Length: 163
Length: 208
Image 1: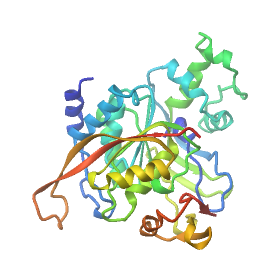
Image 2: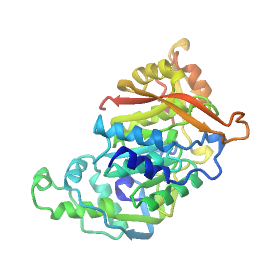
Image 3: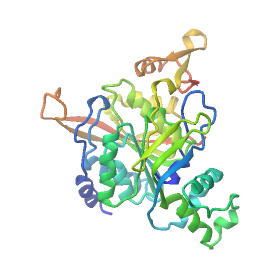
Image 4: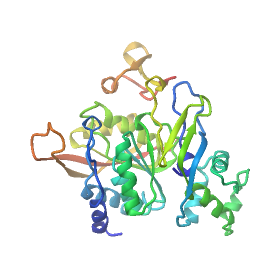
């Protein structure tokens, strides 16, 4: 798993207010070179959570990224120094073995052969509700995908979740 | 890369050794996969230099296609560890970089609309009712540019309504209708082979 992916993942255990970013416990890190694509990096930069990336890179043994997020001029300039560091951190460091740790609960999601296992246990999964228009906007719990299909026409917010 | 070449490379990939019926594991054939991704790039520019997620990636056919069409970052998500092992081998065989994440896509939380494009061949909902809708809902939450998905033609009106009304879609278009040829994979399959009419959809999410 590379840091570009880590920068997107969040802990989804019920009750967790902010599961991002996941802390990294690195046991085995490998480096693989890939082609440098400065245009992609410039485009990508706006979407990156900078502090999370710096911290994550450090956990993987790479401390070359500046602490503070550079401003637009650095990104737009022809000087590739910064972009090369970003490229290396984002795309060339692979976490092969270790764990991703939820910042709130401390729950560890193991990483084996580069693949993080983010599957939740039964009691960690959030319950889904919808607002049932037939019952005066009362939240109604969706217990199964079949409920969700039946509720489709009477609910105004299927994505509502209770912690 | 030419379409025929892409199709050829995808045809060499390993598929499910022991497909799990409850997960609706069916390989996405090279014919469909190559055309799906080729169209996504050539007609819409949604693959090359983009961040592409493959929801329910299975053995990674769509992920591989995205990587071969020069997506700058491809991430495959699936719940089944055996499939992900096969997907990893496939990526190594093709010498492409793909990150894989084991998770339940319907419960996944990403940090907003962080990927450009989602490509997927989701379960049709024949084993776990509503699974196709749950996958679509999940995909629409994380894509900023486009979602490409295959759904049974018989569900066309239902999908369109749900996408536009509930899943934050700016547009929902059937790009083409395909015949998905399913080989006899499971014991309960009576015929040697069956053809299902499926729609290739392109959804555009609204920006959050």
